[in-house]
Length: 126
Image 1 (cartoon, rainbow, N blue to C red):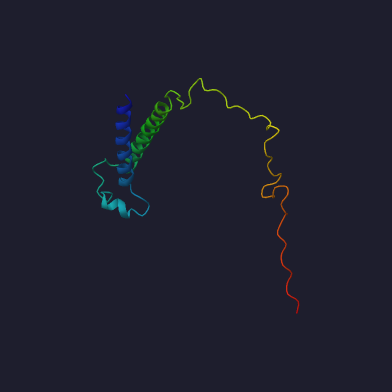
Image 2: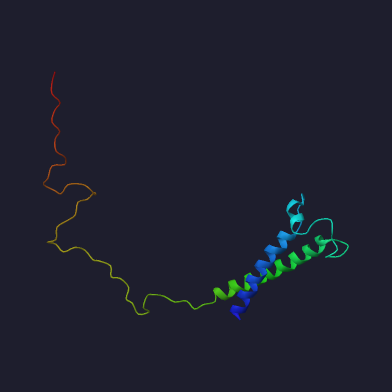
């Protein structure tokens, strides 16, 4: 069923491209190349505009329906996870033991017992 709808969708896409290219524009420059000239006997006395516009509308409706059906089919899969269902929650670390070294209060701050910054030499006097 899914493969049939994909094939129908591709055929309708190609048909829509061809139908739209066959229609004459306001300038009818490119339309004359594809048969949009003065001879309109192929599509009847009214010309190809009403026939091609109805064909375009029909192809657009089929395109939208197949798009919605394909979107529905692609989202209907089962939900899977890479996590095991019985995985334990991560443990929250407790306070550090009394004998453990402490970290500096601010990032980049020197540990206790070290000078904060080396003293810069004084500029030479002139």
